Amino acid sequence: MAALLAGLAIEVAGKALVGQLRFGTSVTVLGVTIDGSYPSGHTTAVFAMTTTLAILLLVPPQQSRTRRLRVLLVLAALAIALIVAAAVIALEWHYFTDTIGGAAVAIGVVGALAIAIDLLTASRWLSPRLASLMENGTFRRAGS
Figure 1 (cartoon, one colour):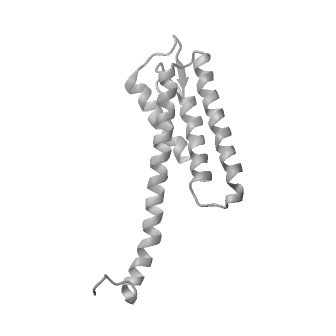
Figure 2 (tube, one colour; figure 1 turned 135 degrees about the horizontal axis):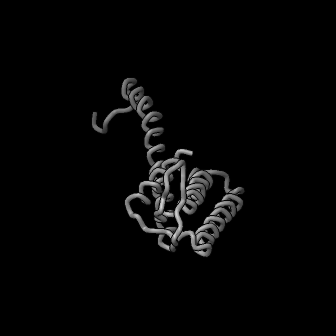
């Protein structure tokens, strides 16, 4: 959920900064008219979900007997994401570059959040254990 919200915030900011006009249409969101099309919000959302699914299913070490199913689920999600990107181009809602930008924003935001969460949880888990090892004398520098 945090990835989707962060992606949405970056997507709205990107539309305001880039200002690439749509195919002659504008969209009103929460009373604000948005004429920009870069990056694609549809593509941002679907690639954020796909990237989150890929990280959750493929990155942690898991049983090898479920590997094939996990890979197939991620490939199915990727196929859906690519279909959405192609559809918004075909419907002339977005340009090709809009969908590439949306995918890049999503992958970047989800990847950055995953790394930040890993670093935070690792430091919270590791710090107390290292401190107790050093206090007990079981963790000493080489040569001490």
